[in-house]
Image (cartoon, rainbow, N blue to C red):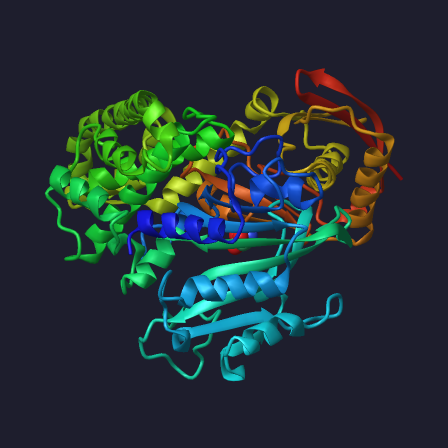
Length: 595
Ligand code: SER
């Protein structure tokens, strides 16, 4: 079964069950600053799950484009994707567990629809915990359909609970459906263990609660059903493939990359890894550029993710021997393949291709300048008997020309040289130290001196930043910081004036962390590693830059040059003295520490 067939069958099935087909929405969430992209089918429907009447009724069906960039670094293996399509059927206060499960079972097993043998089906249901009881009702429905107890697994919250995409929102227990792929498992194999034996195809979520900012759960005004079936993964399973990249949604993209590079997919793991990265990233980048609310590459927000995807794909194209812009070529294939189900790609074809090409050209220019510089240095480097490129030289290429360290390493190895990575990091840190005053003042505002008081206020600024994100949402990004002996001043992205209640909550959260006497520590890592570890980072840095990440206990993690106190009780009492507008869309807080 192809992706197009699956999409059509799913919609037809649910229309036959009195659902109305609605369109999927933009990848860029509307009025939701808690996430950069639409991460699941339920995302655009959140207001309706929370009680707003939907104009199309209470039974809906759709397919939704989704992007998850949390594990962007894992892309390249045989299963991770940054973009996927999700099929979903929705009950907005209409049916609940029983009908949802019965319809899922029928669609999966009936010969009119997917025709999967019921013997291959295992399911999971929520095991219950202190807050919510075990979901016996769902298990009973599965039993009544003939699924034996041996294939009904009760699993804890981490497996069988769907939480909100942001910090707050609708949630509830879920029941997931797994297909036995037939590969031999081990005694540890079970649904939810990713060893390839049981593959999840579908998730029925029973929305019952609305998670509040303080972590409590309020019952929803009406129960809802949100289900999600990932198209790429499901067709791979139905086609008996071990990887999504072996299905017809990736094969034409891969074939085009093979033609362009002369590389062959399926012969060597390194090459496959690069081909998969290019295929995934060009698909995702095409969808971002071609979106209804299309975004251009930039250094902030969605534009930064787009830039990162394109540049990473270019780097892997380069590994396969490409030396000029090329991504727009497989982008044609993506657009041709998806323009039927996603007409915005057809409408925005020119923009996708032009922007993709322009961004590639910008990156190639950066790379060429760096290479030119490298060649000038080469004769001297080759005379070095140790055949090591000093770290400070690699740093200069990086700092002055934006030339990624890993490409310096590649070029070095072509000439039998290596790069002193440690030296690079030392040069980097030294540069950070010497330019700290400057950069803090020009880029972030920041510390004017390193006195005890400013250091304390600096640590308080990190606590404030995190507390603001908890109270207002993840859109709160630092826009400026200025610290004197007397006070901290913190500018951040947020549209509305903060209410007294919000200010009090922020103050209370900060003081609570101070009372917990959290230790403050730091580690150095690349910016990518920092982001992957969940650290807050400004978007101004380069992606492979080595940065310092300061952690305040388990509460805050932020890319920062320091300095900071060692323990939060050194701070005293935190008090906000003023909240005001700083510029369009930017608020300013002034706060002090009192003993
Ligand atoms: N929200 C659930 C998921 O994304 C079901 O749609 O898996």
